Length: 427
Image (tube, rainbow, N blue to C red; front, side, top):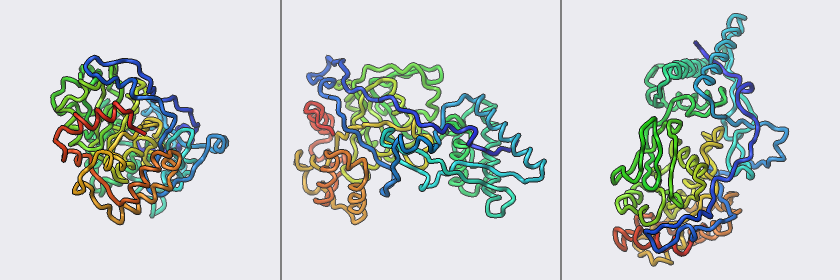
């Protein structure tokens, strides 16, 4: 069956207050170390928020949007999603029988319809809507793609299987032409139906990794992330299949680079300092963001971020904290507010006497990005972050996490991180 959408009937348009996802006063201690990390990790009232772009987004408060709907999707069962798609099919069939062609009514995901709500500490989708009319030449192909994607998702859900976005693309290459077209429509369909993208059973390939003090059941199989070898466990794209999460970790260590993650995994850093180590190997994917959000919500433990000392390290943290523009409609399940910036910070370059040859000159684009970040709300609201970024822009120097290896390959796990945790040196 074909499908179309009138998201006003299905997408949730109310803003919900978000329960705090970090309880930093965890009282458990670890007998394997002389540093009590649960005492070291103290509560902080400062939060950090960034949009996924260097250009500022419009800002709204909860009070200012009381009478202005925003689009927020909700978790749905496969049966509920199927029913929504079938109701869409009935509507467009009725339009065709009435000789009206057919039109999709879709929430707009353009930049102008994305706003930041400080109280929610994340980006959300505004109330603007758009339409796709099959009878208009300029819209016919996009309308056909939307119909095809709805049909394919309906089939996948009926079979109760999952497919990748690449699988979806190859079902009709002549129609889709470019995977970017089918990927974009996939997000449109989620807003039309009013469900999270994971509820559509179309996922991206594995990217993120996790190792350390956590266990869970994945589709009936017990997973202990302390016994998954040196490389740890791939974060599955099917987050909905994960149940019974257990952990005695005192914090999550969120690492930007896979190389730094592998150092911690091989040294089994989590045995001496009870933690969960996660990486998305750079720019975070949806599965890793959703996994992190769920962990902090269920375990109530803080997240410490270890990223490169450059503007892009901060932008990566921002995606975890506030969400991305492409997925702003699903920010509630993809964001983890109040991540602490552990390192590598600009002030660390002098504090730890990083050799000059390890301090890289910032490019003109780096400097421009750094100056634009200074105008962002998530920087301006946090004086400590503001100070660090000002140091970076003033010195015009940046450094990668791997630069710490100039002191020794295990310096990051044996000296840098232990000292950071002992001193409570995060912001």
